Length: 311
Image (cartoon, rainbow, N blue to C red):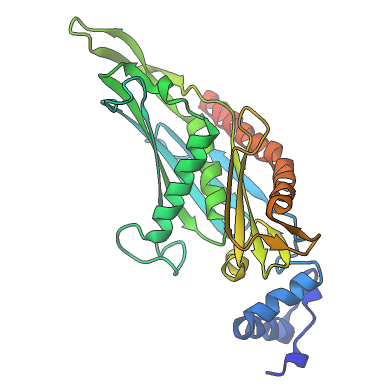
């Protein structure tokens, strides 16, 4: 195919049809780098977004009846992640007798993307679960001391199990949002009293919320060819990006509590940024998104409560 015969990438804002659409699809498969760069050079992405604009997000809470808390997050049209909170009692670690446990996990199967394989968790799932653990721990969303039932004897172990239903990029952001929403949806059985031998008695008919602190939000950025800074990359953009930045915001203080940089950390568009300047630019962009995501969680919880009352 002649490179000069390819259609203008400005058609992203005005979707092509017929032969033009087929021609662009073939060009994308044969020359993915050139296809992406032509879009970015015109300041518009394949789905019509500007470079610094994230995709639309929706959040639903209380979607799984047998879980203590649950949520579903949809990112754009192609990424969906569920989170379910399962709570059980456990014995505290001997070095931390006054603390409970918060354990996230994520399932990435071939059902959500052909890049994942059947079998035990692969490297991608293990790395993502580690990042989610760091995000939740450093945010301070759930003080471990609040999970203590009887010091040195009994505590709550809170498992947040996430499943990616569809992966079109941004799974880490969607999983973090789903985990936070599910934790806010969670209810624990109340501890009524203790028996003569000191063991607590639980009342499943009355529940209490987790002692959560804040609503942390994770925002990620792709760095393409040391040139372009892209907010909320799709799977196509993500695969071609040479680096990325993950920014955790929304804890009690307003500073970024978690920053993870991978790959090259320099761009020239929209401005020449590198190192610390690039991180600060990403933090400013992420800060604009935090109140929007927090409102989505609050609205989802309110909708869940309204439905429960009506039922």
